[in-house]
Image (cartoon, rainbow, N blue to C red):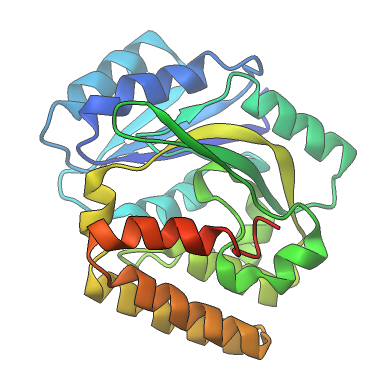
Length: 271
């Protein structure tokens, strides 16, 4: 009998952190799952690492793209291919807590009406040093109210496949922030959200993260935020918050980091 859960991961040139990420999933206390991994034409040795683990553990299904497709396209394809009821997202540079899947599958047994939920994360740097516990709202009504803040941490998410397909699934054409877009559409489709009030992963922030979030990326995110806010008929506060996030995002990284710490003190997701 096929497992009722599939972990979905897309990899592109993450050989530095990939082993720790994969092993944190394979060593989960809850072991009844399939593991679908896309190698997105990596050229840094990630492919060899993935082939090793695919040969070692039969739960892994490895798809190697001859040409790079992008994260959004791989996630959309994954949702299409997967046959299980539940899908857990995982990023190739993060580390899952050992009981992550156990806690999440336990939650859906008690709350079968939930469609999308994640949990807290502990932020770490490129060396694995802990920075802070990142909290998010746990109640559906508050998550919906704050959907413009992206109150679901993407690599902690477990979602019901049929519900995400009903919301339109991932937009394969997007280059960035595919989760932000999806949560807006999921909200508009009436999906039920939740978050566990415990950390589920170590979420890695590296210098590359800040380099990727350039002016073009920040502008695209702001436009996505305004479009999503209109879709869900968000309050005026949402438009102010999206604008503030854009201004913060285009600051030089050496200024952005201390400014982010100040803004985090009044972040509505953490209250």
